[in-house]
Image (cartoon, rainbow, N blue to C red; front, side, top):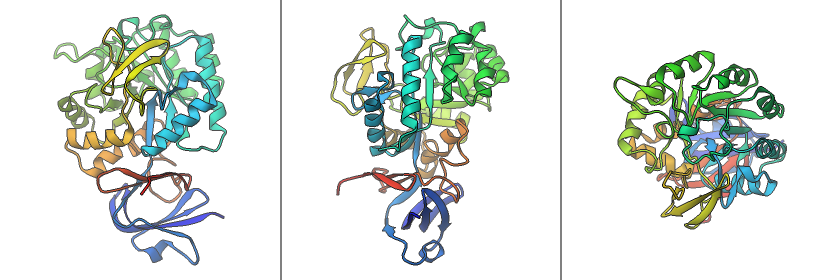
Amino acid sequence: MRRLGIVNGDIVTEGGLLPHGALLLEDGKIVAVGLTCEAVILGDTPVMDVSGQIVTPGYIDVHVHGAAGYDTMDATPEALSAMSRFFAQHGVTSFLPTTVTGSRAQTLAAIAAVADFQRQRPVGAQALGIHLEGPYINPANLGAQNPEFARSADPDEYAEFFRWGNVKLISLAPEDPANLPLIPYAVAHGAAVAIGHSSATYEEVMAAVELGLTQATHTYNAMSGLHHRKPGATGAALTCDRIYAQIIVDLIHVHPAMVKLLVRAKGLGRTVLITDAMRATGMADGTYDLGGQEVIVINGEARLPAGNLAGSTLTMDRAVRNVRQAAELSTLEAIRLATLTPAQSVGIADRKGRVAPGCDADLVILDQDLNVVTTMVSGEIVYQASA
């Protein structure tokens, strides 16, 4: 039996901050949370003293393409391992490796690689499954997706995608009638469905919600915009209480005022921080590849040669700090947008995103400036900042 006590930390719980609290971890699970060390630490249990630090659930990134020079579409164990280690350095304990629009063969290779990686003991953050961003998107709203592969949904093709059993989220354009049967199909096979890269009207989004759509991919970006007589996909995302709204808070994709607007409209329970990070994240400026397209990164800003934003170089710890400032949130409120809410958005809040008995011991220890000190996955330390 593996046991560990964590003591004297300010623990982030659903009920609020537990100052100078303690946790007992056992075999990768949280088994007790208490106000005093004596409440949870028994006998000769090893103890980690985290005085002056914050203990929070691990961050969860449901939309991230790559980092450290690698990408989900590389479809190799080396790529996913490197990404996993990098994400852990920035407080992420769980993530959905995210595809870009590609061919059937490319997409299947990525799905298979992620499925294989899920069976391994993580060296960093844990892959929970895969997020398919496309290929069933609107060619009129590609963003940085490859126009060569954007297409309507084919039941034979997506049945093959779902056969692996690890698709947890799929982003699509619901205005295409061919894509609509995929929504209830995906939900029935354990995946959440998001509107993404879409020119859908407000009415088309709401019709898709009735079929089971529950998320908006990188809200504001690559979707029909907000107009007071034509609310569009953005208006639907902001006003429909059944939609979780993903947002990239790198302060490049979305102006701080619009970040504040989204958080006020959606509330803490429906706002999901994502990074949408691509392979240049953690790397020097230069030229990179995204789905077979050239991306130029200057001062950390990733764009296609034509000027389209092409993912980000954002990390989740920076996103939490950014949203705290932009939306004028408390530390606990900002942390929720990277922990409990994304867990709820993909149906894993019974075991992830919370510091509570019975949950996985996926934890991040932060200093008071929200810098990552230690990251733990299933009770094992997978990252420790150097002193």
